Image (tube, rainbow, N blue to C red; front, top):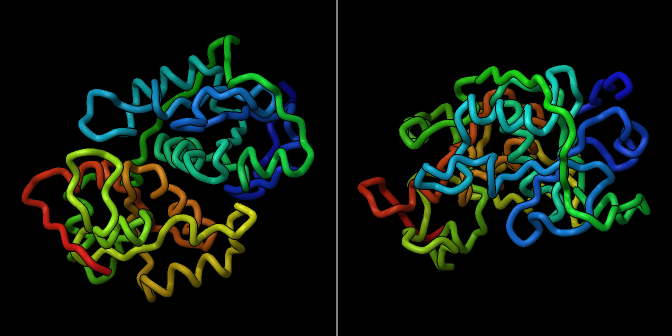
Length: 278
């Protein structure tokens, strides 16, 4: 592979990826119905969040695997420490942000999300192969270097809710946040954490599915968090919370964390408090 290019930002446009395609590792991080579906950017490898790249021994889905398991999975996908990685998904900017955040949490900064995902790539007239993401090449030498604090647990979120200098933002829909719509995972309580703020992840994207400009992203966060700079993000299972983390990074926030278990953990029957309404 030719020398890896420097990323201009944690978000790259389809034309940037088209120009540098031969120099980067491309991952398809699609989940759900899009997982394993035919239709990929040429050479895309599977970042399987519904499979090997989540810890299935944990009670909540999409839990971050151990550093050892993550390292082994990335090596099996041929990733080296000096590579440049671009992640996309077939839904737009959805689960790709989770893959990007996981890489950051494991000490790998040479990664970016494809703005608009596969739909934007196809809309730009760029080629899509009629096959699913796959990789059967040589192993890589990726080294996991965990960064404590980028993925946090329920106790850290509870502390943040009690901290006037921090804000906890929930990326779920307004109806799920209010408890007026059922949770898609059985057994979970409806509603939200007392003191949490609702910022549906789709609010950070325009009608074209692209992330909004940095100034608009900053305004969206400040409308809820005010002058607070320490932000924590939650969602249903730790996936779309990472879209908020991506948006906050683009908006210039530096103290951010994702609640790994998210509502799949907090919403379980327990003594953790839950409220309903807006």
